[in-house]
Length: 382
Ligand SMILES: Cc1ncc(COP(=O)(O)O)c(C=O)c1O
Image (cartoon, rainbow, N blue to C red; front, side, top):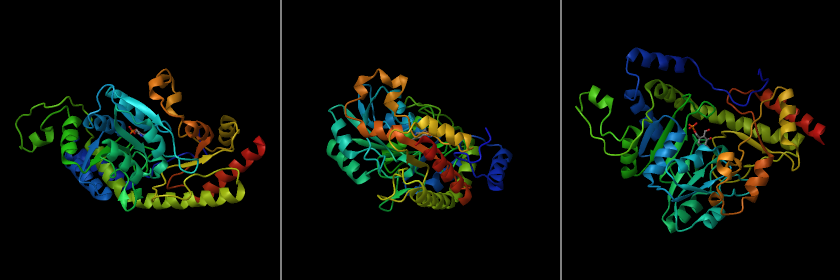
């Protein structure tokens, strides 16, 4: 479909092309110097002691659950209003995801009050999601985790550049998991990064990323090792050099991308409040500095969301839903043990949310086109 305004778009230029060529010509394609540099540069960007590049954020979440010692039957508290990978990672290791509600219709991140209600003697960890790039209440969540001796994993797929109290999101908890999927604030196509300040966790994650092996092909290529031992049940979640090289270029650009996303978000907010005040825009006042990953808005209660999205499509505007709550999915439905607390806000807000186009190359005029289309649809559906 040729959209007039698509939901997301990448911003690649000659620098990314040159990075790919550099790797192809170097003749070393899997984890090597590019990956080491990417990890070091990303560590500096987020202010973390250790970073490990991986195939994607789902792999990062899986390894984080293993390193957090989530064993079969252990409970991990997660939001339901997130991408399914957040909860799937818990199930990969036999853990039980327990769904917590969100804070309010103004702030769609996991609620500390709801987290507390989910805790049982089987709870081992909390996975928070900084929805759309906006910060969860990390001081409150870290306090709860400390009180109950829980590991905190940050699903930071949306948060490349977001901060809270001067500290990058993804570095508040024990392990942060970032995504470089193609719709993210910086992309390598597929790709992800683990971050931690804990030396022991970093050591375990590093070994788990590559089959549990004590040395890599790169080490042997460099003459640093002749053989290896296998000390853990690991996986092949390694990134390749082409992605790392693209990641290094994108990392240099992401600050500028985020500034543009911020401007566009403010323009949306101004135009929506002036022209279509029926549309509610969450995350307007609150904590932290966002990287403005996506532009979620809430339709008036009772609006037929699919009619609305169809109407937007007819005007050439792509919209999306973030997210169908996980506990509604077929693969999650007949698992009553995942549901312990009331998810009233997840239900009502989840049913009203739509996501509007947002990407750095969008023009101010595109925002006007989207807002005019929203005005038309609201008038039609009244
Ligand atoms: C909140 C959230 N968690 C996890 C993921 C999984 O990321 P990846 O596609 O890199 O595996 C995504 C990707 O869209 C996401 O949005």
